[in-house]
Image 1 (cartoon, rainbow, N blue to C red):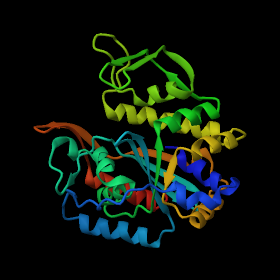
Image 2 (image 1 turned 90 degrees about the vertical axis):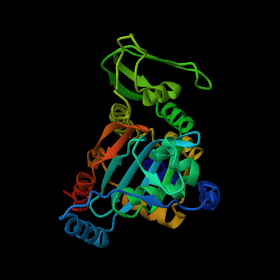
Image 3 (image 1 turned 180 degrees about the vertical axis):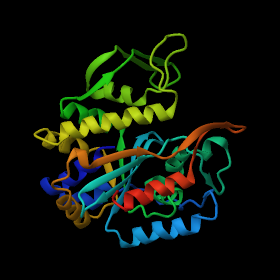
Length: 309
């Protein structure tokens, strides 16, 4: 999530550069996935795709996929595109239920994008996300666990959020069982409380508590949390956040490249960070509930990002 900011400063200010390449990469050598994408064919797609690829070719942007991990699945997936020239960061949250077909993976649960991490690791997710985004390159991955989120929020003194309605949810089948309780109002979330806020999707039946109506509502809450966390961390709390993040982040960014982008990121402001959601809609089909992306609107969003509009 906000791991990129922590990561670049870790490299510049820590004395751990000698171990960076050895300890920061994932150890996963699985075969890359073969993805089948419905690209929404129409008569204008060729022109629009040429326009997008032309912008990509001429751009100096560097792209990441940021994964918030919950066991073998990616509970949070965000495509991030950093423009070192314009000093801006554009992000697209990808709902975890996004419908995605991989050859050889035919079960209903395997057709959700969050299943790709368990099968192919973070390196394979780069291929998946690039395929979803019309072959826009995904240069690097950054992963962060829920334990990492808890430690980071503790290290910065918590993340301010406003909760408009009580939150109440219980899941006895989780290991350990999950119990979420929040009263309405202003909160400063630390540790496990921040994780509970991020995981919450729907209330207990009949409780009258806040309903985020599935993953899209939760994505919106995550985006608000990220913006609030970025505002908190861009200041004297940064050194504490660095130490906490280093233990929980994995990435394939080479050391020299990371240092280069860290220097380019100096001067990046919170107002220069734009977060949107992959265009599309949730739908129920025979196989289950999925999020189906809108290819045309997705391409238009990418063109907007690469045009720096």
